[in-house]
Image (cartoon, rainbow over the protein chains, first blue to last red):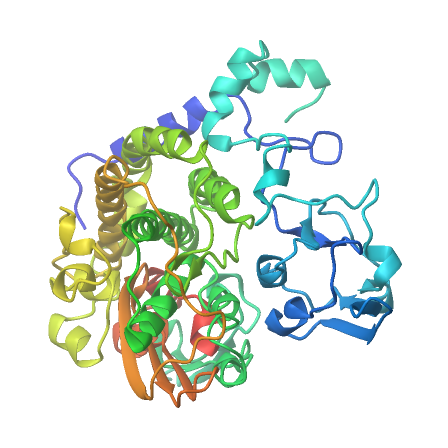
Length: 183
Length: 367
């Protein structure tokens, strides 16, 4: 290959890299600083509402892997009583088909994403472990009423706007000064 | 005394940074010159085609996410289009537009990944990839907003899409569409005139036009060889016939042309998005489809222009709730068969970039 003048293309590329030194970082320091996830996040584990559940097992039929196990018996008022509701979340692929198919909104996807376990056995969750609690909150996936109550997602498309509006325009120089170290 | 050499067989992979997954190449070398290449696939085989035969048509949609995991949206689209063709289902207007928007966003995200990793293979270690990941991240944020996941979307449904878009979606997408052409120019300035990139990729790994047609190559690999064939234009599916876009075609069929075609396709995808956003109609996003779909007895082959080439699904129905046969025509496996003819006689370093320029995804090759 022959070039008229060597080095022009490389110099142009270096200019782009150089400009990037002076823009604000788009990454965050994860465990200290967390971004808001989507309102429809199909996050970890399910939330189960026993008062709404009729034991129809539509969720169990819709699961591609058959992870949901439901055992019922007929109760006093001619309705089903759920004896066993067990989800093997270790095999769950978070497709959300069970939540979409539930006709009584008795099942919702969770909103959290930090649920590493040491043992596979800990991932099999039964009735009591699936109830609504402080650490187990529903997401707005297929649940529009829940969706509007959740905080708005942080979007990277607006990263420069957000930083400027927040009055904290940071770049390579200010950041290293602030933290006392390199980025 | 003359130096005597003999061919040397080298196993490249399965764990090798340039193979983009678990993939092995048995390379026969004479010094540094490649004499023969034999791709060995199957390390990521999960038996998706067989698994799908035991599941309903809706339950199979999450499996298609796991084929080409860098372009899940188009995999969903190809599958649901095939099922709709089989069952004869009409899709609402709004869903058609949403599908086009998602497919074109996915094409940009997939090409960003392809271009970034191609430059990474060339030796521009990680810097271009991270610049392009920044843009891909913006798209993943938007996908997450719509369907709740960043990689395995499970968004398309038979008869439409699973959810309508939230109201924050369109302003954010408009902003992305407005700034994307400038960013593509920045990449062009960054690397397209770089002497090292040009010297290493121009004229390397040439795939001639007749060979590209004979091995049934598709997508950017075919178009870089000078064949103007795009299924969006040649065999329009969904509502692509209503949009105005060009088909970028290369001339030499070398690694640089494949890179160039992908960059130009990103520009065309932005153009389609610009047209699709204003004409997005109101209305339903999913047709009324029975939960347990039983398509009539028959067989169908549905294909789309996925980011990596022609992605087809061949489905056979026996009027039960699960497909009788579920066959995937992956674009990159077919494109990979051209690798041997492209690299013989070149050096090992050229093998890496030629392989990178095909843009394979092992989830799709091994299924």
